[in-house]
Length: 416
Image (cartoon, rainbow, N blue to C red; front, side):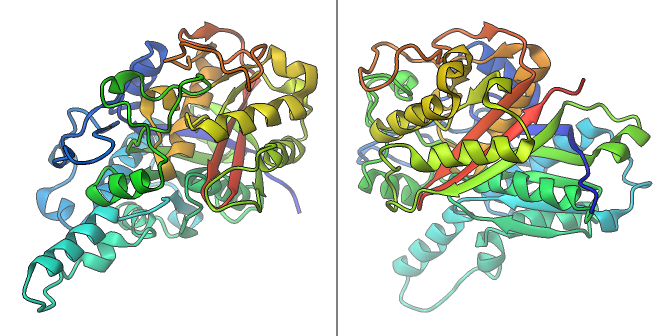
């Protein structure tokens, strides 16, 4: 069977540092922190009272009020980012074969706010079950790709991937393979999450996973810094339009990058902690390189998972040195979570966009909020601390790892 080439022809982003791809990139290059005190609910009694919420976003500017009420925020975000990506791709919806256009979408949790609110409303009542008829359709993780396909009439493969924080990277890899194997010409792929809620903040606080730097939220997400104390919860969505290369060329599409390959692995170690030696991280990057048919020295940049947790940053850094050897010290590596916070199931897609734009712009975004080196992390590695760095990026990788030991890595190549 012929393995087809796959390229990226459209991008859409809705993030805590920008509500479009252009605004997102501007925020990244300027080292903007998206962390602020929580406005969605009264967080005064929570251990963590800040998050990376969306800014100046009004859903009814994009979606009819009646329709928006039928969607959880994670689906609303998916629809908005996808609208931007499809418009960016300039694909003619009247001319394409919609039977060969699919949607694969990632969400780590899905409609958490919907579930939370319905349960709170029931608990506050007299015990009579009065649930919203849209409760289940709003909550389920696969409703986002369903809503996208309904809006645009895409009748190809359609499902959700759920692998915690690796979800949207898994979605991109699945979409890549559906096109590679000839089952689709175009795939809408990405992820969204809206977990800045009472249940989300409370649950992650109970796990002691979140930073509690309430006195200085803007610097709370500090990957690889000695004084990091947990991740900062973020929200939003990212969409990539993946297209078979010849299909894209035939319509004169703008091509951002080629999707060179994807890797998957499991830590098989712990429900929340990474393997201390970075074994799963090592395997997923090695698998990705093998799938892409590239050598370690071909890679120029890696957008690391880099969540700002004490254990995770050490394990991933170790894995990079193991995979890349001496070439590790020639890489630009970074964590855009220092600016956006951790978007959970949307992280892979949003960070893939950052990697693709690094290839296009010849600039690697910074890892902000670095103050003190950690003696458990190799200080010879170039983490692109605090300022962006210009360099030619022909190959970029993006890592995402999730609770349960799920690991995914996607590789993008410059189109020559």
